[in-house]
Image 1 (tube, rainbow, N blue to C red):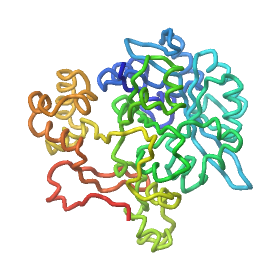
Image 2: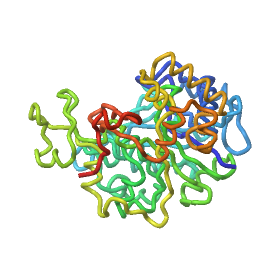
Image 3: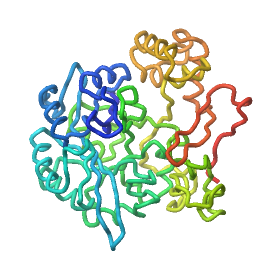
Length: 409
């Protein structure tokens, strides 16, 4: 059974998150998007945990169900610790096999931080010790470094990260099987590091609103079963873990270097030449994902490891409609057309990934169909995101926009 899963989202109890991040709305939007398995997010938060227990029904496969959508117990935590006197602030995702395990984790993790304060709690606990605690409670837990390359709060981040999984997790590195690519990197960028070949690369939305779930996802061909999915990830089983669905990484908020206050978007080559200082004000810039990958890479662009899980780059349908119509993505016209199309064509993922070109041209307005086809073929123009600003992507009128495809240096 082939299905899409988005493991990393947040609830209404996380900061800067929509009040609509409730089970009912999440399951509704999962169907609209075409997501069969959705992470719960935030299971450490006492109020959200209570809602999960009351609104979700346990299934035989170790998952939980609401209105035909399966949920898997997940939470993102903020590990705040020091290594050799240097502050390290790393986000990690925890997968739990059942409510009983989640409850035991909540009791133990509550010793290291205030679980009520945020759906993504700050824990005064090293990444290494987090793994040990989780696996001592249940060997079926899975710990995944979140958005691995983001400058802030990630394992390889330019601000407080590490240069390897082993530096971060010490003797527990052997129990790390996956890395989350994040919106500003994709598998191809990660393939440039030989030492990452053993890890499965997963992609998730990290969504703070229901409409954004599924903007990145993972596609499986296996049973809707917790252990089978986790085993597929651990084993990097290409027969069961088929591919990931990715943002074009240039669109991510931290792909390029830059300084948002000065509206300075800086390529890695320019940043290196200027000693990572803002060309406008002279202050330190935020070193982005593209630059950081280049620092650690030991392979050229385009290298594909033998055991690589494939990926497909995608732009959300609402953005394609907005670009085709020449209006803002948040406009009523885009919302109306979006809902009409996903209702007619089963789901957003079916339109973006499933339908043939012939069916797209037959069932969608001409320009929207053309937009989907161009996205599938990578025919887009992107002004790269930087220092917390999303990139600007265009499918149509590339010549008028005068923007060229990005290259690394």
